[in-house]
Amino acid sequence: MEHVLPFLPAKSLCRFKAVSKEWNRWISSPFLAHLQTTHFKDISGLICQSPGSDPSFISFNQDAYGIPSPSFNFFPQLVNIRTTCNGLVCCQSVFEVGNFFYYICNPVTKEWHELPKPNFFHGPETAVALVFEPSALGFSAHYEVVCAVPVDQTDVSIIFFEIYSSRSKSWRTTETICSEPDVLKLSINGFYMNGFVYWTSLSGAILVFDLKDEQYGTLPLPAGSGPHGALTQMHGELCYMLPQIQDGECLIGVYGNLDMSLKCVIPVEHEVLGETFSDCRVLTCVNSDILIILLPNKVIAYHVKAQKMQVVSEAGTEGFQNCLPYINSLVAVAK
Image (cartoon, rainbow, N blue to C red):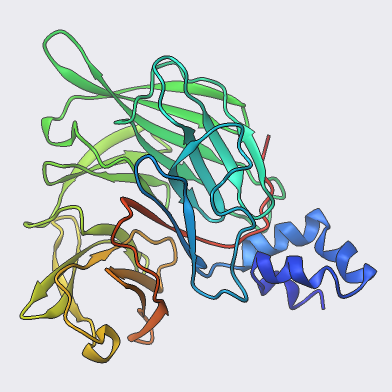
């Protein structure tokens, strides 16, 4: 039993508590939660939200994956979902002048922690990334929240970087300040990979932040990039996925290297599409073997190694502004 359970999703584990007192005791132990966090890596579904609406959850397997309160109503106030990472979710209270809070939560256990207020005012345009790397050697699930905060000064706009650490339980402002004009307007959701945080900009560039040295750099985005493309990890490398609709066919361009040049094109199989679509977008994913493709009335998973496509949900995603991949985990939230 102990060899199998860590590889199962959180919803299945919670259901198996009813098997016996022994199973309930083992599944409820912090040690199993730690093992499951480090072993289970499958993307379980999407946490979606539209402006002014409660969040919702699209499960890729109703029997195996789920969260008990998809609207996140266990918080004391309404929240906006900002970003996810390896089972943890970063939320922000609905924006009010002078009064906002960040929360880190696990929606499976409804466990959450309110972060102290940062040094700067973080408005809706603040770009946020959640950094959490489960480690078999580290029992505590420590995380960082990395924020790129735009500040308008008298004659120039700049970006400050603020980082919250669950180890120190405090925010710190880095000495690095960014004034690059191409990255002053960023997408609000960041992508973390191998010690670096990445944000795409509305001006066709990528802002890169090195967590170790706390320095920034920039990379180009491919021509034609926009809200339908996304950064992701493929074969251990940073890539940018850009979908295009040509003659009723959906093609995913894979761009990489320092110049973000075209590496290959992935055609979405007509048998998977089922019909002609005029809209297609991809999502940033933490699992390097899975690429998530959104169509107006279905969600497709592309398995990179097997080069196989699979319809994982026939739920509509067209009305959602924010859709974030989520891993069904028992991870404990560091307070």
